[in-house]
Image (cartoon, rainbow, N blue to C red; front, side, top):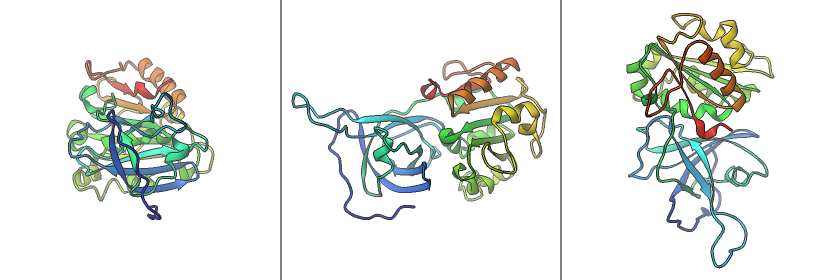
Length: 279
């Protein structure tokens, strides 16, 4: 966690967004970090949704108007009952937002959208037995929220997070997930029996190497301690996808070939994609 040094950076109010203060920052490595902000009392969200996060625009005012804030969609990694809102972000050195966002410290202010939304929610899925949360990179974030929601364990017998990354130190929250959410105040007992975590790495030696699609094809995704078929079953399996466009497109193709249909908030199905993050 970062240490507060210097006076907080305050930003001007903006009618379109809420202003929230940073609570903590954690740098996982040179290109990945987490941060949390205070949760406004009126802010409600469903586990798996995203919200806009940003900072004031840079540059000179035009016709007396300041530049528009720079905003990006961020999945909320916190469970819906949490008192703070947690996010996971990449670091882009010259990125319009992340180039600045990675330098924030506790007490600094950010803009946050007033209304969360998204399709990576339990409401968009039909009931089943196994819930697979398949992610690459920062796509892990919404599944940190879903996996800490008691409803997930009431609706499914097994909840599985699969996190694919290039390097071992990209496995954010590895220890917490490896311990099956043992310190979670609401789901620790259920997670001890029903939650499973499968991290996989593509560019360094690791106990599980390969892309998510490879793990699906060779059956490793369905290995012990999971119970059930060694392939996706449209009758019992439900899937959420978040991460790289390539992973989502390839995996969605595999799911559709297996007979699973995509769902939405209006029409629940057997798998869901967060369309806001797909090119």
